[in-house]
Length: 423
Image (cartoon, rainbow, N blue to C red; front, side, top):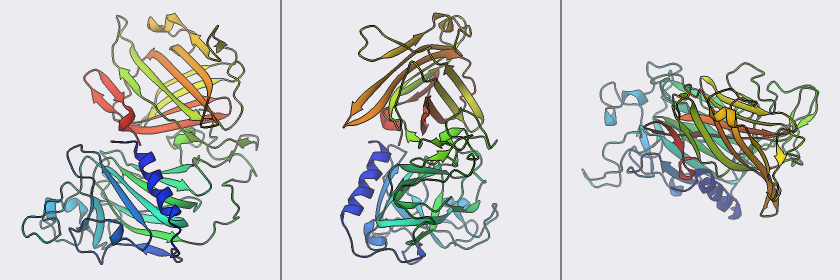
């Protein structure tokens, strides 16, 4: 399984490269009512020029999206799945959606063999659906059904035409719930990825060809005052439970405003970020965090002058926060530009000098002609708040901040994030 963000970036790039003359008309609504229930959905079932790609999180289930009829009577829904029925009893579920798009549990077509899945049902392990647009367009909204409160809500990842991506969380409203997810700031995009961590169905994708207000080639906000969430200070400024680049007020690829009206560099994505959490690793009972990765720099990096923060959070709050003050990262002799920090006391279970950070390594590296910050972090402490798979890692270096929200894999004594596990 390859990196899902890369996969759908390729889908989007390939779609744009086709230069198809047909362009989405204003207020195009992609629904699925004219496609028979049980139909596997490919590019051919979508409006001209749109493409689709699917990745099922269940390793032994098909990477396929199919049509599900939500107008079934109670107790008569395919897959015995009344959770997808519309209208229904869940929050906001007062509108008949009829056919919706789901990630398939299976694609068996045996009784009869007619090109339709025999017993459509949505994948409980979740997955991702990527849609590529024929030309840049504005994504206004989409309809989502059955995001349970006992499951991570998932998110949309928008591929911004001006570069970068923007993430929009999908709230978990409860069993059989329905919601119209409005897209903040109506960005111009080349496509999107819908990430679901469990059940769910999608419909009524509203796309508009009008230019966003203000126009311009660069996705940028004016700075009349500070953003509701200051995107690089490591704090939850607007008290919504999300911090910095993990907050929808800090979309990737968009310059935002700082506390004093200054430009804050766009949020970027942490790349190549394997990580490990191990519980009770030594005699002191301290938990252990190890992570390394890289991210594209938006401004000049001076490790000996910049501060450094690593932050791990989940839906319940902060799991770990470690900060190095200016000057605590020092050049490593013979380290080829690497700056390092080490505090043995942190390994012994004490607080040490820097929030239980044991080792930090940071250097700048040029990749494909672009500057990247490459980091390695080892830390000890109380990580007992890591109780569910979806966690967000953020790294702040100077003014730059990068994020990766992903579903970690549970292990016997902790959690693991492998390269192939995250989008």
